[in-house]
Length: 193
Image (tube, rainbow, N blue to C red; front, side, top):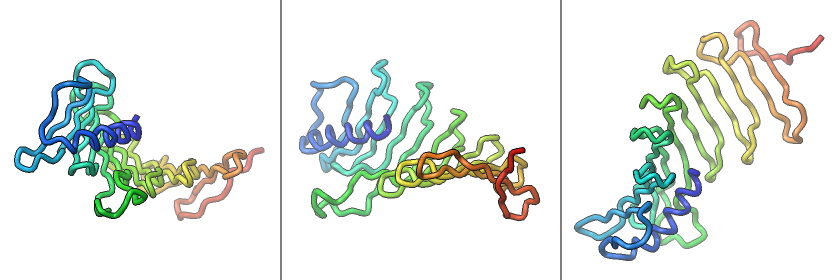
């Protein structure tokens, strides 16, 4: 849904950004907003589930996506914030990535407090930190490689550092569980009897 929202909005944005004033015809789920002085597109509001209420807002600079805010559980509050690559000049050409997701934050408990932090590399999920216990500190770390989960590290003792790691082989083989029983950062495989 996240990627399709951006791609859909960019397609709509490129069409509506050329207009000087918003038109009322068209999709009721998509509402563009323009700067009163410049006429440039500033925001696209979108009703993703078509329930009559906007639940996604893509902030724009003309046709360039800057950030998005999403209400993931339809309670009227923002739960996810996405930030897009903005360091590419608009005149750099059609093959230069624009609107590329670089990081996101999410309130996984839908309480307004960020508990998941995502980093992206070339638009693909690369690293995740998550606070699964609600104490404000990450206790789960994920590493993604080429669009696949490569490793998950867990803090099961509340020390602020991982004591368990699950490593996923690139060949699709059986994941390996590693533990740090002493808390010294040295992991060893769990040996099954």
